[in-house]
Length: 131
Image (tube, rainbow, N blue to C red; front, side, top):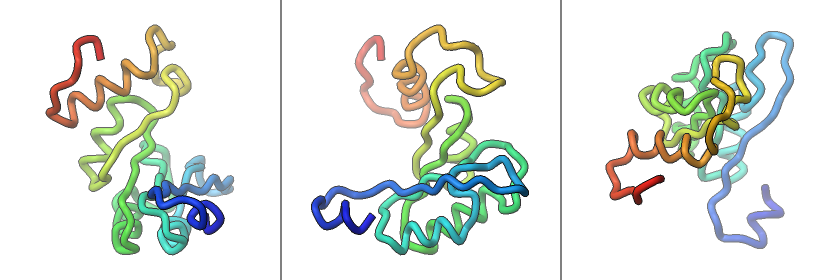
């Protein structure tokens, strides 16, 4: 993080990828990791906001991120899942590739279309036709 900050003034999005025995949550699974990323200067911290069983709740993670002065990016399994992450206090939502997770239908269209659909529902902007 520090190396990137030394050559760029752009805001950083930070995340950790940690395999743990007590959970399948992989992306920034603990408040301590979220706080460390914010402490390194990340403007936004991405975390797993799926419904997977976890040792720390989504509101706990969001609270730790916000208390450390960063914005929370909810990483979810489906386009519709970003609404849950946002409803719990996340500032932004992002989902993995369409069709990647077992409960998602196979990708019949582009990820862009899925992302745009989520964005249109969450943000009342003048979206271009077909987006």
